Amino acid sequence: MSKRDYYEILEVTRTVTDGELKSCYRKLAMKWHPDRNPGNGEAEIRFKEINEAYDVLKDPQKRAAYDRFGHAAFENGGGGGPGFGADFASTFSDIFDDLFGMAGGGRRGGARGSGRERGADLRYNMEITLEEAYAGKEATIRLPTSVTCEGCSGTGAKPGTQPTSCRTCGGSGRIRHAQGFFTLERTCPACQGRGQVIEDPCPACAGAGRVTKERTLQVAIPAGVEDGTRIRLGNEGEAGTRGGPPGDLYIFLSIAPHEFFQRDGADLFCRVPISMVTAAIGGSIEVPTIDGGKTKVKVPEGTQTGKRFRLTAKGMPVLRTRNTGDMYVQVVVETPQNLTRRQRELLAEFDKECSKDTHPEANGFFSRVKDFFAGEAE
Picture 1 (tube, rainbow, N blue to C red):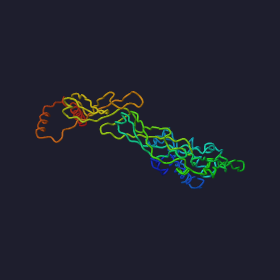
Picture 2: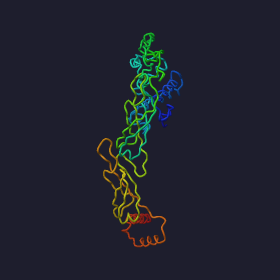
Picture 3: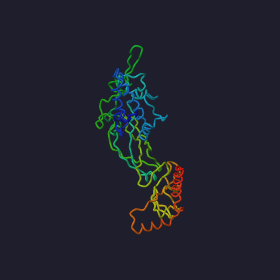
Picture 4: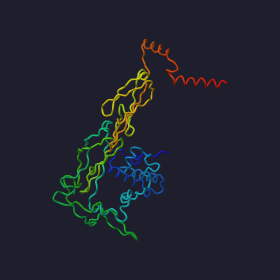
């Protein structure tokens, strides 16, 4: 039975941001949690599927591998692992807190107590041409994202004021609760775990500490990138809340199909049709190269369809090295079409002059066929 698509399981599209992904995961995990659906076998299966999908898609490297290879990226020890992996506890801790309003040991209390939270990572898909992948380029991208509010410098408080420590939790962001032998913690309802409250919010950002703007960034695409290459721009993601550090921006490259070339690693392949006459008596052909130039390829007498000619160092550069791949020209002998009467006469005369040496492969094949049937008849 084939596995369901991870994006389908989490009810999101492939362009979903990390923040949106986490939000959808929380909703689905709460909906299908076994404790909320006692005795429901389907809920247990759905809950495991949801956690497996989120465990892969929340990690930028695993997500990139899944986008390129699908479930095959995690088969035969490829990583990712289904169900409850080693980092399941960290994945599930937010949901546990949302479900029951409690968490053990105050693992995140220090981070929340400061009120500063890291911004979400962003993903940007970019398509480039094979020529651009060969030469590299400086690309300009525009993307709407959350940036730190200039009015309050990210604090969320009105200029001239500051957030104050939460009186309910004393600034820790957590409230301890003794229950029997256990001491449990829950998120402070007054400050939502931030440890601080804003009594006079900034009018520009309504207390969020960040606003949405379109940013323009310059991205250097190095020569030799391949389809699926990921470029990370540190601190170019969404701004953090309350002055927290920004997330990162991940640019995923895809290379558009080329009219003439097919790529395999650093090597390029080009399929070139040649005339029957050129193949028979030899000659030269002119083929394009990826750098925008042309080069001549000598075709020897008697060349057959499928013959490959190697052009050294005419392929793609190898990323971050001085090495360059090769270019392979594969010729295909084209059979003449739409012949005139005179052309037919000339070919008929040529056929009369042919001998076994003119078409050695054809004559050898039919000779073996004749011997085969003769042996069958005996």
